[in-house]
Amino acid sequence: MTFEPEVRERLERDAKQIIGRYPKPRSALLPLLHLVQSEEGHVSQDGIEFCAEQLGITPAQVTGVSTFYTQYKHEPVGEFHVGVCINTLCAVMGGDQIWNELTEHTGVGHDEATADGKVSLERIECNAACDFAPVMMVNWEFFDNMTPEKAKRLVDDLRSGKQVLPSRGPDRLCSWKDASRVLAGFPDGRAHEGVQAGPESLRGLELAKQRGWQAPSSDTGKAAPDEPVQPREITDPPPNEPGKPIGGDVKPGSQEGRNQ
Ligand code: FES
Image 1 (cartoon, rainbow, N blue to C red):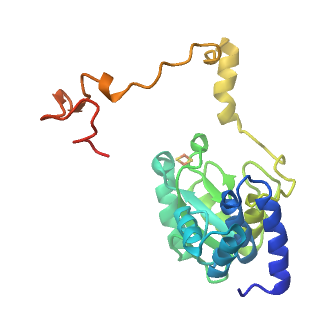
Image 2 (image 1 turned 120 degrees about the horizontal axis):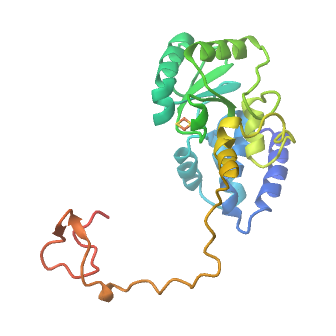
Image 3 (image 1 turned 30 degrees about the vertical axis):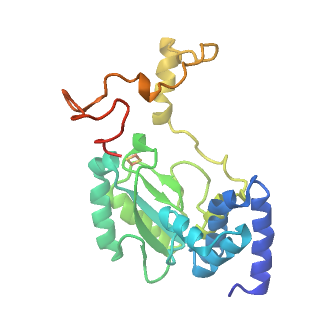
């Protein structure tokens, strides 16, 4: 292990606290990965080994998880990690154009950082903020209704050290490492700052109130569903293609011949 003794001691103290929140130690893996990322800015081999050791699992298991989720970085990213949503709605609303112009403007591509280490870029999938498309994120804070010009100005401001405000959320941006620490489960006490849900997100609620619409009643009180259907009870297998039953002598209820 190459963590300095005092760093390791601090990480162990924090890890113990995180692990104590879960019934089984291995359930703490995701926040623990954020914890080591908050130390180094990415998940290094040392970080992987630290997590494995704390949780009693193998480094291979930690690696499998950390390489599955794109929030964990395996190379250093910038102090400000900038995501451009290129999922369907944002893409057609200008996200693709923003991405193209921003990569040209900064000279870096997906998961790459500028030479000054200030900014890195990532193509990201839907952020559940489609009502503000196209959106960008900086260290997971929202920047709504973006344009290529606004995007380039944002990145220039971040690189020059100018204070920028997210469209919603806290009143200032924290660093990538600080954001990782919050995700590890150590709140910075700023979750309730600034604009929370924007007017676009609340429009449906307003309309519902004006028109007296209500959510359908829950299932509470309804009879419990019947027992699951047993294979022997299926007499008419579902069709494999429209209008065509699963062919041959396939027994009812068998999964033979289906995509599995
Ligand atoms: S598609 Fe970009 S936030 Fe949903």
